[in-house]
Image (cartoon, rainbow, N blue to C red; front, side, top):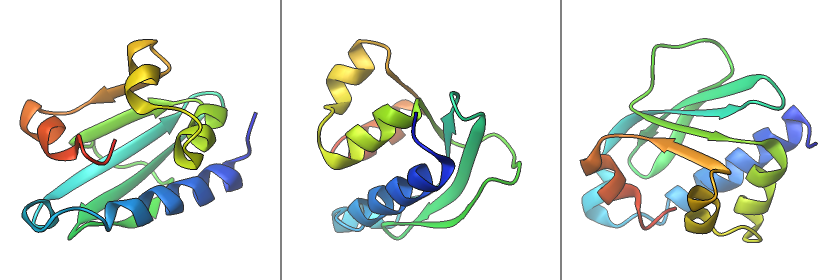
Length: 109
């Protein structure tokens, strides 16, 4: 099991990948949460202009885009050792968002 600090670093790497969004998606502003159940922690942030900002573990209102993933799977996903679609199909990753948000974010995941 990974640590909270390792997950926080992985989230920073993931946020860096968000900078690769195309211009049409950079206007997207969404609240995001990432729940890591094996560590009993939820990270919250705001996706704005292609970057994840204001990341905290403090409780917030329900996010518009919600991911749930175990710590080791998060590290593997960010490292490129775990394919998001395959992990989602096997139930290792859960993603909740509106259909339009899913379409916009599909290139990142």
